[in-house]
Amino acid sequence: MAKSVLITGCTPGGIGHALAREFHARGLRVFATARNTSTISDLASQGIETLPLELTKPESIQALKEEISSRTGGKLDYLVNNAGRSYTVPALDVEFDEVEKTFDVNVFSVMRMCHAFSPLLIEAKGTIVQIGSLAAVIPYVFGSTYNATKAALHAYSNTLRVELAPFDVKVVTVVTGGVKSNIARVDRQLPEGSIYLPIQADYDRRTKHSQEGAMPNDKYARSVVSSVLKSSPKKWIWEGKMSWFVWGLTTFFPQGIMVRITFRLHVLLHVQFVEAESRPSEEAAVSGTQRLPTHDKPQICGRRLDSPKEKLLRTTPSMGHQPLPAH
Ligand SMILES: NC(=O)c1ccc[n+]([C@@H]2O[C@H](COP(=O)([O-])OP(=O)(O)OC[C@H]3O[C@@H](n4cnc5c(N)ncnc54)[C@H](OP(=O)(O)O)[C@@H]3O)[C@@H](O)[C@H]2O)c1
Image (tube, rainbow, N blue to C red):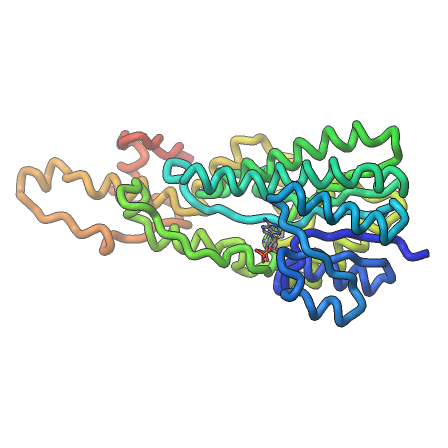
């Protein structure tokens, strides 16, 4: 009899959709879920069983469990907790109902799914697959809430793995880098009064960053499914854009290197620069020279600070920001 797999968050264009197609192509019995099954009718037409699931409603999880149980005789071989939501907003600008929604989908609902489906997984000596993220291990700028949810997911899974080992249920965390999907679909704006408004354009770019040069989701699915279906899968699978680079960094270098690299890779160098530029120099104060408007300021992210003015910035204390360490 074909092994069964249940996948959350399978709407078209995302990772779940690609995973559903790939597991199906390998001969598994696939249960693909979405909030509204009409959005995944293309999967149904390929022979995949589609079911409704709203993760934030415990009664929806319970109904799904009963349905799967009756269809499989109380067994499930693979549970793939894939559904998730992003929230790319500076830590100081977050709205707390959005923080709660993000934790609800990315963490609490995964805990509810593992709780509900554990009897079926124990019966089948099955495997839980958690779609984690590089964001759990590196400080992706402006993603503090999302990063925290994924770190919580990784930590939860590390302990779940130990607690389920006596029952021969495996837990695999896929530490995922950039993959083509709809994850960055929401257009976000910095709120009025944000201390990051001087770098609005950089913030806008950052909200879509995960999709720049991202791995095609079918390629990601092929690799992940191959790894998961091994008789002894790895406990942590690294896949997606930059995943091997980050694996190397986090494995062989001290934590401090990540702070330095992400500070430079992202936009915070601009903040420090713009902020220092917007303070009148002593010379300007004496001569009455006009300051440039913020949007005309030079952009310097991504190269060394070498000019005399830039060197000065290293040593100029700024409001609430640490000066850059000298090389
Ligand atoms: N893409 C990347 O670069 C990347 C990197 C690291 C980790 N990940 C992780 O990969 C997983 C899949 O995301 P994705 O990139 O494929 O993004 P996506 O295209 O936005 O897919 C997310 C899926 O989750 C579903 N979902 C969200 N909230 C839900 C809820 N309350 N109940 C049921 N389903 C819900 C979405 O359904 P709707 O369409 O109805 O909203 C969608 O099907 C997520 O856990 C994400 O954190 C992605």
